[in-house]
Image 1: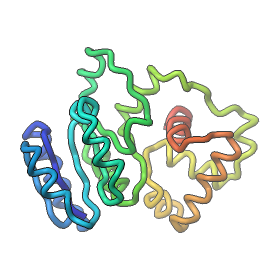
Image 2: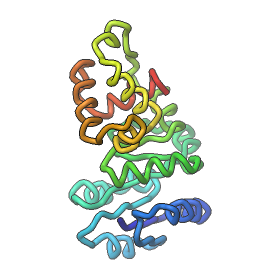
Image 3: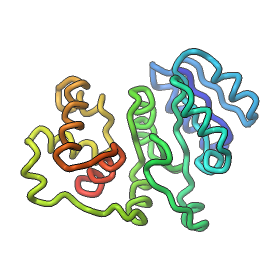
Image 4: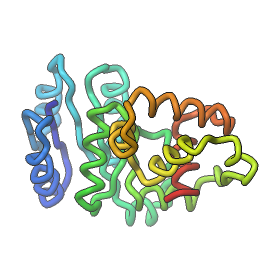
Length: 208
């Protein structure tokens, strides 16, 4: 998997690079502030991860188009919570699959990299707090709903709430990733959820 870091502050790029160096599945790494170089590094028929600021992503539609139209580019967006609050920017979990904050801890960035590798979703804890404080989706899991879930499904839901990817849940519970994904689907059916972002948000609300 290749990594392209574009347009983030140098100190943030250094931290990202340092953590990426510890991950064996990241082969090549590029840090650039030039838009033309981004395209050059991403035009490869292999999985690539583009890390860029959430602000740039929201301001320029071309990035969304590039990522959504490609089957091999994954994005990790870096948000500035203070800017989001100052500008009163509304944000929900449908914006992207993976969003972290610029001052995330190392373990959270690790979660983000693994989520990118596994085509999973991940939002750092600070970002989830920001979204949940503003989002109208606030329904918790009722006691009756909990009774609909098996003990193993509750275990999976708790780990989703802690930000674990499907692969990490599989390793934690000593089951296969396929089994984890099956549990996720059944949980969504039992709780009448239609979007995976609702599942993540609900789990974070109740089991963070």
